[in-house]
Image 1 (cartoon, rainbow, N blue to C red):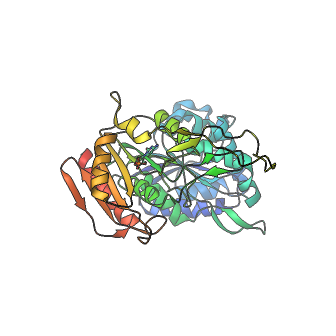
Image 2 (image 1 turned 135 degrees about the vertical axis):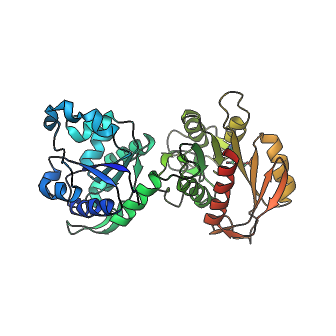
Image 3 (image 1 turned 30 degrees about the vertical axis):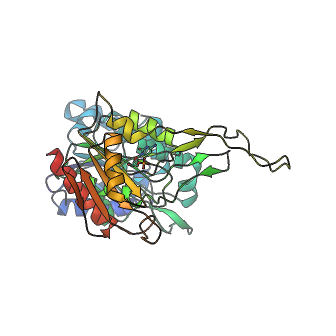
Length: 397
Ligand code: C5P
């Protein structure tokens, strides 16, 4: 519970706003101070009086409310907060945030702040699935906004699907994670995860069996220790963790670009299964089965992200961790890989058929450092992640 912390809570105009009343109550019970901001649309769903009564605080209702700038201008409002929470975050509010609009108090606050922002989307399933909303979500996550939910279920409009605002305990857990005071607090850590997709033409691609489960668990474990995580993920099977900055990419080249444009990191964990090669002569149009024989694919080598970052002379993270998925002679191959790539640690695992590790729930790893190698018991991927995150925290202390 975020005791003693100050939350600026922006309430958008959605049916889920009634849950936000309970969120306010629970946050206050947990010792947090809540400053509520109610959008005009929000006022259609909950009254300023009930919000003020539950928050035991003034409700800020509109930009023009702030005529008394001496009391607290829109900049001051967010300056005092430890975290901004937007719940419910409607499609309209998300679009305003993604577009950088500032036509009312809520959007102005969100544009004028440098504080972390957690959004809890809530809307009709079709609005949620609309490409515009998904594009806005991607932009918001890349901009560093944290998200919680939405959940899938019955909707007030009688439909079923994703779009229901996260439940109050989930939102509180995400707030706790965002405010976590762990050993990695204030440290920026970059994590790559998942496979990459290398196009053959607009409809076909080359991929691999990585599910993204281990990288996702590592990002979650680092965030739970308070790290500020940038999570660069290829098209994975598992959803990204909550409480991290998500950057979605498709190809190895996209992943390289995302890693290079991320802000400087104190540590970087490269858990992605990056394709070694891309198709150099990928078709701009779908390649046709036209009876003129088989297509010929030419390959080009992809950038080695781990080696590039490890060998940087300027702005290299203090700790660079690579992964080595091997099928034979794991320790020897991984030790050679550590030297070749120039990283500090290698987390090596045996992914031979029969181990069930690739795409499975468990992992058996050997950690290779400058001091030598240590083999961990086979355990769940989340336990491996927690152990690795604890080691990273110790190394950066
Ligand atoms: O060379 P190999 O693919 O076996 O090395 C695995 C490690 O290198 C992993 O940490 C992976 O994320 C990273 N890697 C990378 N860019 C590549 C290939 C691998 O970052 N192009």
